[in-house]
Amino acid sequence: MRLFGAGLFFLASIFITNNFSIQLVSDFEFANSLLLLSGSLVILGTDISILQIAGRLKSQGRFHELRAIFLKVIGLIFGMSFLILFFFYLLSFTTFYTYLNFTVTQILIYKVLGTATFYGCLVFTAEAFRPLSGSLVTELYHGILKYALFFVGIFVIYNYKLYNFLIDIYLLSFIVVSIGIVIHFLIASSDLENSTTYTNSDILKISFPMTISSLSFFILLTADVIILKILGTDAAVSIYAQPLKIIAVVIRIKVTLETSYSSDIATLYFSEKWNTLRNTVRKVNRWIAVFCIPIILFFVVFARQVLSIFGDKYEAGVYAFYILLGGVFINVVAGCTGSYMNMTGKQKALRNILFVAALINVLLNILLIPHYGMYGAAFASFVAVLFWNFSAVVYIWKKDKILMLLS
Image 1 (cartoon, rainbow, N blue to C red):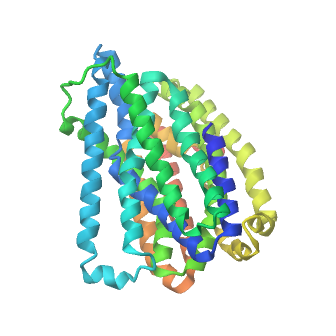
Image 2: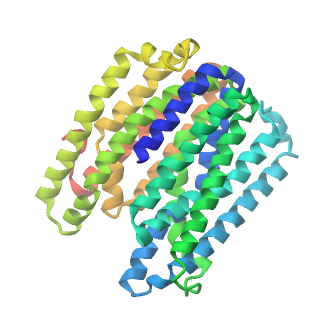
């Protein structure tokens, strides 16, 4: 269902780039990237920690406290959203903000930051549903409904020539689905208690390390588009964002393959079955290569034709596409490094690696975009991906003597 939802968004992107102006596409891509980044911040890692907390509650016979913890986290998300909005409000009065010379209005940024509250509630609640009702509800809301509403909405505004409401329809889809899933959760958990011994401090202690990893990852995904919007041009943003969507297809396949073996890797590692673990890692890496490398080669050979589905003018992003494909190739060759580190108790090391990679990405974007535009953004992404994959491979080899790199 999640792949189906991603497919809907991909089809919507093709329709948008072929029927809306460069300026509007640029604003939309900026809004989407800012929503993902701010949403990952307001959620405070609780979308991951709630699964760990639910597991602890079950093991202690206290699962009835899940609803109370859910309500506390919703409060934390709203509080964090307010702080972000207030911070931006203060920033708008500084000379730093004036120097940035945004090409988007403050109203658009406030809309996105306000919607981040609902984005955070949607993603968190979707994950909270897993221990309560299984994954079906999670994937229905998080994988399909949020994009299905938007998919329908863009055809409505196009039919009635309400083009300027494109971003509003996109943000509104998150708000509507968020309200729906929260109400659904409250109804589904009505037989649970509204009190818990967990405090906000307890929740944050578990969630905060996950916040750093998650935020670093989303910076890697979104920083280039946001900084390109600030320091570059609208044409560069709209053209550059389309290869990123194609790259995301390969990454999604890779993550799906990694996830299917994650529990096996964890079990073998903590059982100290080293030979079987090495064979399993080797198998995962080979499957990743078998599925992903042919797709990458296809994109390399037919790069212009693939980009042309977004419109003729988007073929201008072909060289940036090549650079990004180089980065995803490195990520594929490095194998299941991220999943392996998460499943074998190396989350803190992974967090540190991702944080440094995100910092490298941001700094290179700031330095290169003013001179090289979208090519500078692509190169910044390539270097960051190279750094974090190389670092992870070396770390795993030193710690466990397991060689990734399609071993």
